[in-house]
Length: 248
Image 1 (cartoon, rainbow, N blue to C red):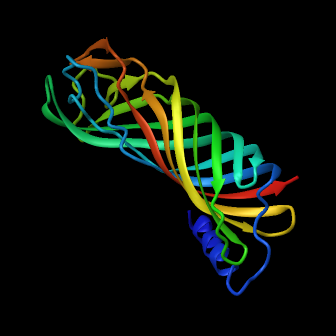
Image 2: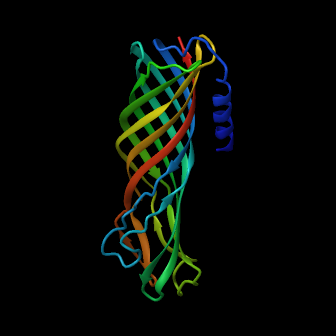
Image 3: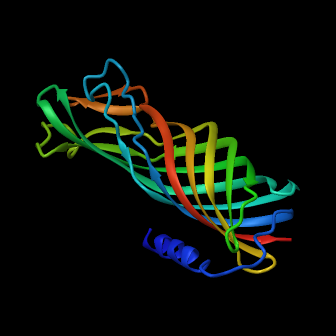
């Protein structure tokens, strides 16, 4: 994240006192994207009827780097159409909450897992016909498909010792699961000309990567293992990204 902030500052400072032709807005282009995704609360809903977790435990999905590549074409000057593929790597999903359990009563619980997603988007981007030195603003939107995986999710007692027969301090173990769903994004940013064929962009995106779900849950009612349904939520992100764009 610190590197991204440094690059962003250099991006702004390098435009001072420059007057030249702006970024290219026609023809084919190839973009390499790197960003930092800050996830919003997943608002996971625990299965109803279980006596292990509260009805909502709102796991907090942490931040993660994003890598992507985009190929597109300016169908008319300043209006671009592109196909993008991207990957978010290992958002940490952790939460502390309370639930009323057999044997323990009201109990503190810690859960932890990781979330990764691969997505493809068809984007439409409009370069606003206003230039400041070699910078041009742009806006855009995209829609596509996301495949999001949640790793094994382990729920542990905090800090009580487990009753006899319960393995270690594990209260429940969700199996890994992958969810495929519709995804979309909105974007706004600035693009700067570096050379005749190379541009640099700095942008903000709001990404809605669709549904996300854990696997089924094996939990322990005192010492007897039981199975319940998966917990489900949404995977939304605030994303800041830098992109190097090669214009053919």
